[in-house]
Length: 263
Ligand code: MN
Image (cartoon, rainbow, N blue to C red; front, side):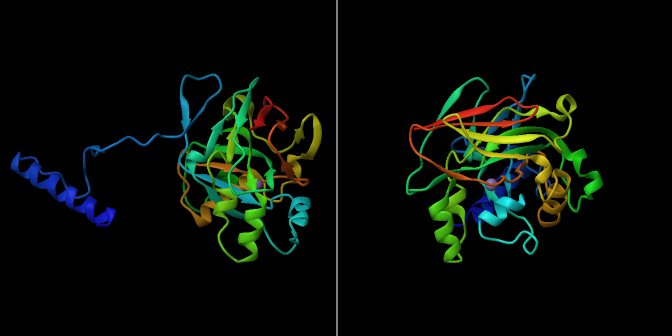
């Protein structure tokens, strides 16, 4: 039985019970449904708050820095950036001052880092104008769009979806979220990544093809954005591989660094 059919039947049963009790619920209305088990809500700590940010969807921007687009074999003047998603529970929270163990995933022999600015939304909407887009932002963090590059390329070559290369467990390390009220917006500043202390990626946020405001505006043309959505805003050039034992450290001006050890 499909889940929608099961939902319908459960709804009818609830309405019948309500009718017997003399308090039928209008169609579509329901109390919080009982579930046979609990599915965890992914959250990310908020700096300076007891509250945590609930993650709804993870959107990622592909080829948002010209030099990275070129190293991936495309021409940024002809092909605009684009979107893909990771599941919300791909999040791995990494607290500042710690070096979190990050598991080397199965199936790959070419596991790549991508340092990215992460944008967290407090509001949603459709067809947001670039001038209004930053009004949706709750805060910012930094993160890694970890990638099974060999599988991503293989699937791309076969014109198949990227999921296995991009959207796997733990593929989205992220630091705590800094509310925009405290840190402002990120339009410039340095973004870098080191492996075992050696600089690998080093660029500035100004080199993004789509600014954060443009990313939100473009995304909202394709999807209705909602509170809890986060956006990995793309990586600069010089992505590359890591192996077990390597330590990755990433930095964006104005945010505490984030570090993981590949295990
Ligand atoms: Mn990326």
